[in-house]
Structures are given as C-alpha cells and as structure tokens.
Length: 470
Ligand code: PHE
Image (cartoon, rainbow, N blue to C red; front, side):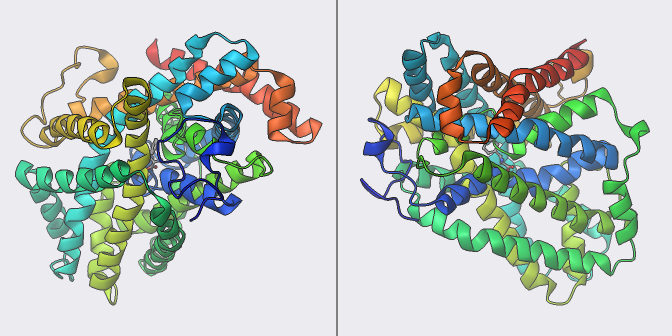
C-alpha cells in the first residue's frame, strides 16, 4: 500500500505538519484496508459469538446491529471527519480544530480517553491473541482429529490452567505488535490485509459450510436472528452498545488518526459504511460458523470467552482436511488480531512521541512493556486469581475477575464515553459549514447524520449508561 507523497510510512508517527506534507492514502481502498485491519479482529470472531451466547442470541444481535447502524456508522463518520479536518494525530487534530473553530481545548479529552482505552484493551487482547497462537500448534499437530467435545474442552482448560504457557504466547503476541509499531512502517501490512482478510473470510465460509452439515444450522440461525426479547437484559443492551464500539474500533480516536490521511476527494460516508459492513459481515459469519457446532454438540451457548476455542476445534477435528484448514484459520486469526493490536498500541506511542518527545523505539518499548506486565493480571485471572473479584462489592461488578473488569471498563464504559464526546463535539460545537464541506453529502443526508450525532447518539448512550449505573 503506497502513499501518494512524502515517504512510505503512511500513518507512521511523524505527524508534524498538515495533511499535505504528511502523505495521504493513495486511494480509498488503502484507507478501507487499514481501517478494516483495525476493525476486524478478535472482536468479530472471538468476542461477538461469546457475548451473543451469553446474552441470549437474537434480541441481543438485533440491538447490536441497530447500534452499528444508528450509532456506530455516524460516529465513525464523525471521527474520520474530525481527523481529516484536523490533519494531525488525534490530540493535535482536536487542538487544531479547537483553534480554528474557537473550541475549548478541553476536547483533547477525547484523545486521552482513546489512549487509555487502547492501552488497557491491548493488555488483555494480547492474552487472547496468545490463545490463537497456541491453537496453531494444537491444530497443526493433528491432536484434534476426531475428538469429542469433552476432549476439546479439556485441551482448552489445560491451556487456561497453565500461566507459564499463557505468558509465553502473550509475550509473543505483544512482541509482534511492538515490532511493527516500533518500525512505524505499515505499508507491507496493509498489502497483507488485502490478501489475508479475504482469505479469512473464505475460511469462515468453509467452516459455515461444514456447520451446515451438522443438522443444527437452522437452530443456530434462529438463535441468532429470531429475537426473543424476554432474553434481553439492560446489561445486555450495554454490552451490545459497547461491543458495537469495540468491534468498529470506535471511541478511541483510531479512525480519527486514520482519517487524517484520507484525501479530501474521498467520501467519508461511503468508506465508513464499507468498513462497517465488512466488519459486521465477518462477525455474523463467525456466529453462523460457531452456533451450529454449539447446538450439534450439546454445548452451552453462554460458555463465555472460551466459546470459539471449544467449538471451532471440534469442526476442524471432524471435517476433511481439518488440520490444514484449522491451522490456516488460526494463523489468519492471529493476523487479524495483530493488525487490530497495532492500532491499539499506536495512540499511546504517538502521544509519548509527540507530547513527551520520546523517540518511537523508546516509546514503543516503554508502553509495550507496561502493557505486557498488566496483561499478566489477565492471565492470572484465568487460573490462580480466578476467584479474585477486586470490585465484587459493587453489585454490577460482582464476581468479575481483573480480566472481566478490564473488558467491562474499556468496552462498555470508556469506548462509549469516547464516542459520546465525539458525537457532542460534532453535534454541538464544531463549525457546521466546515463539516458540510468535509462530508460533502446531499443536504438531506447531511441533516440525517447531523441530527443523529447531535441528539440520537448522545441520548442513546446516555440512557444506556443511566439505566446500567442506577
Ligand atoms: N476492533 C477490534 C476488534 O474487533 C478491536 C479494537 C478496538 C481495535 C478498539 C482498535 C480499537 O478486534
């Protein structure tokens, strides 16, 4: 993926100057690939199926889809727009807009929320990325062939009960992420996204094909798409909202950073919709791949974070050429997680570079190592500290381990909060003519977007927050 001017490192971190000096994405496709690389990851394949299972299926999926359409896409447009208008890294973009449009510089808080969220998410994301790495060996060795659900479950519990192995793979994953962020050059990675993402899609289709042979495909489709509102709780709505932000990489200023490289002539609305549709498509396919296997083997849909590791290996153990497909699948999953992980570490590294004057290697090492160390708490939450619920005295956090708390606090609180600030900024304080020019929509469509970010998003996020915190 090349950029049209000034160097190969598209959004590398040398963020001085305006867009014109920084080199823009060469095309709409380049931006879509980078944004998709960030959006499609463990959120789609690991998290979506398990939170859907935990929250009762269809009604949850419907709320999640509504959140994507009504909240996610408009916020993504707002983020990309702020980034492009600002033309700098998120914190400096907001500063630049604040100066130009006369806003209060306190809006920089959006950037701060993003930096903190990315750092905290990466600490546990890397642990799950490590699970995926470990499963490459498990599938490649053929030990899953013809296994029963119990045996596959035992392999997974074996992994979780072993802090040393978890630490090893967590370290490998974090090192992969740090390597790319330290180098600051991602041109090769974007090219890889254009090949590996479609490959992941095809492999998911193969698993869906297998899932159709289990005889439980209809039941799974009904579970996913027939809403049963009696299964929906207020906390389920919060999880659906948080997941919409998490899966689209929103509320964290990532899309803002990428947007600052988007050439002016490219439509922000079309690109945002494309990225969101791809991301949602991958998640739904993952659901269609996994739930038939869950029902065919009498497994529990609400089994939690281990769901894909207890179901997909069963499919790979039973289908023809399963070891090959399984190995390939987990390699591609690592890749998808890797490109997302990079976008999680990037904001804090950029901030250390710009605001603290540290060089890129030192900031990557510093932030990466601290994040890695925090990841150890998530690893221990899976075994030695499995019963340790530090905030268990708060009713809604009862029984939540450190890992659960990090997930809850980032996805369900920080990201929607970041998104809320973006919506308020675009809806209430930024110059309207400037936004009209930036988005270049028909007046009707612009107003629809404007009303959404001005009223609908803040009210929806506010109501969900208030209901859950009461
Ligand atoms: N969207 C990524 C996923 O679904 C996770 C992510 C969240 C990445 C926020 C960047 C920012 O896996």
